[in-house]
Length: 334
Image (cartoon, rainbow, N blue to C red; front, side, top):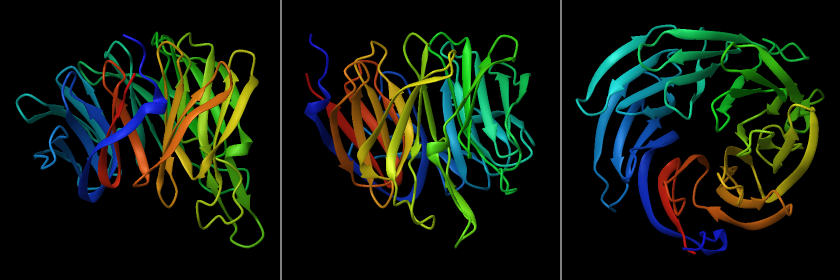
């Protein structure tokens, strides 16, 4: 069967919501989604039907910003600074790590073999945990607590390489660190100042930062996503932007901007290097597919909501997007 062609992308279902969904994971080989919500809970939703059923799972008491699934175990984090392990099958809590971070947790990344999970938070730390027992394996310190203009910084995102040996973390001012997962040591750093805007004249504030990271299939390159330079820091009136770096040489090898305005919140690199997919949003949402070999845009289109996260099925033909008041299901035909 030929590979699915992103130019044949089409929307097959929209599920309306009252909440904002920040993160999504999927139960393998099903349309059952696990979503992190601003209603303070993790929900299980059957996205295979229009009248989607919902089951409430972990309750954080504050915004839930990230959720990942390792086997039958859900791990979630949020503004309560906690990590919660939840048994999906028996619908019960396994463990809670109180004060897993000193400030709100922004994102989680699960290692490809499912044995480790990385968390990043606004205490500017990345921590790697043992999925099986919750033991902290590494505490990684490579990001400054404050911006160059002495405002508090934020550590937005993290991503494992496909072989699980490397981890990348990215912060508000465009600083990226690549780590050795086995020993917790820094391997390299990248500076991406194009994704950080500072207004020191009118509003005296900044916007932007590294919002998405993805390693190439062979692990030699790192895609870094966010929003380009913004004229008005009170809005998201800047171009969606991605830079691709050879992280070991600290060299930018490619850069591009989408037609849409807004932040690239999620990057997914196809395992056979067919394309790099990005989703995000500003006043509305967008998705694009970019050929990193020919450096050409394959396809891009709007989505009906600011999109925070996306997950693909095993055959890379179905996508589930979550964001502001909607879940969108799309298919890619050959």
